[in-house]
Every structure is written in C-alpha cells, then in structure tokens.
Length: 69
Image (cartoon, rainbow, N blue to C red):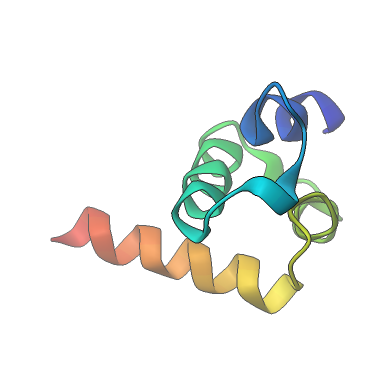
C-alpha cells in the first residue's frame, strides 16, 4: 500500500504542497492500482493526502462523474 501511495503523491511526498486537482489525480492513480480494494486503503490514502476519508470518497465520485461525461 505504501508504494502505491508514495508513487501517487509524487517524488516530493508532500501532500501539503499539492493542489486539490493534484490530490484528485493522486486518488485516481491509487484507485487504478487497486488500493481501495484493500481494507484500510481509504484511511491510509486520506492520511497521506492530509484529508478526511469523506474527502477521498468525494474525489472518487468526481472521478466517476468525469469518466461518465
């Protein structure tokens, strides 16, 4: 899980410096790699990005809507 998160967050590993859109893209990368299938994946991603679980779910919903368009 840590490898997937690290690769999604980027080389700096600093989620504080990420924009909202960059965080959404990071969640998309984590989702494509299957992180959210694993129990605790959403919580680990939220902690790494400095957001709540609810925010991660919102980002996932936004990505789904974009794909549907």
